[in-house]
Image (tube, rainbow, N blue to C red; front, top):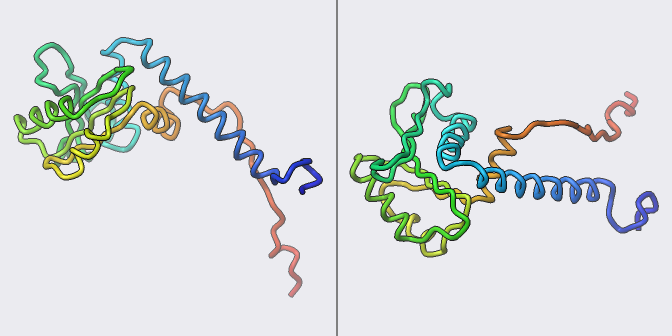
Length: 180
């Protein structure tokens, strides 16, 4: 038992548990706010996230959100790199429910129509297990990002979030106390 904390947890474990809870609450809040905004906002957010993750370079020349009636199942396009050697097609679904295999198949059909090799399907909901299995062995390559993962990426890449406090953890530098 750790006498400083009064439990069997170390201070580091207590901090880690608290940090995990704060992150979970923040992710829940982000998802709620995304769902409260328009589909057009969500499509822009998806492109902003891809840029924040390093795709395409700058927001101005990296990607576009093109979702609209008649978009043929493509909501955005982003350059894979700054040179634009390849593009990634995006599908954004602001849903509460589960995205199934038929929705993924429609997206894959849209990718085939563009002769695309890569796509990312992002939803605020979840993906069915059948949808996840389907994308494992198909061409083009399709990455599925569910609502929880989307929120985690937003936190990791500082999109829609801001750091308001940091707490550096320090320990004794044993090398300093070693006499030669």
